[in-house]
Image (cartoon, rainbow, N blue to C red; front, side):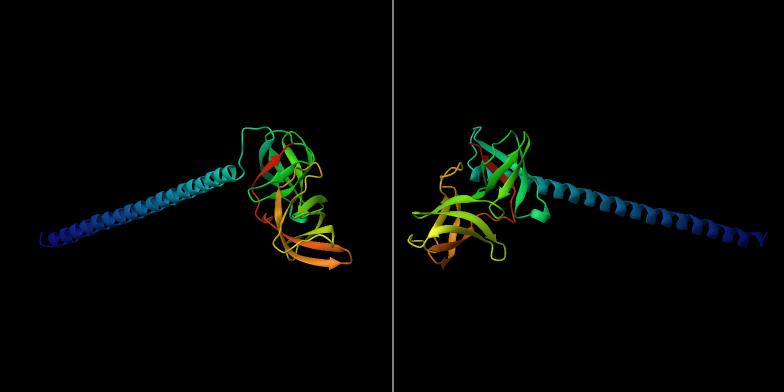
Length: 223
């Protein structure tokens, strides 16, 4: 009988140890499960916060573009957004999406000034020739007229030619469309950065108002 009691004590100790061990493991498992769930909830929360922040930023950007572009309820002013911009002709062309067909030769602007001209279009998209590409555009600076027909990519300057030496052009003068072509006049392009005289011609380098590396919402003036 005396030999059985120590054995029972050992069994009791083992039983208590097993129960406590199982309880400990269950508790640890519950803690890790709760920890994982909390992490998952936190990640989900951050994901939703990021999406909400992106949507709010996009909405503010759209509202700002609407305000700055002075969009009216008119078929002559068509809001558009860039649909495609190829890295191989980044400064030559881009494709925009439109809510209705626009006319070839129509001016494309953003809130800062002239971006380019519509080269071709269908009902939903249009190909735009950028001022930094192969565009020949009649411009006006002061009382002088010239032809915008080049771009200095290194210095980010538009090049205007065919301005004779007899016209007074100064650094800082505002350059606009002339209105002599189909494009309406007085659309801002940029300011005179420097002037180089070659014979009877003044070559004018223009700092554009538009940042051609950062284009988003645009408007087509569909005359």
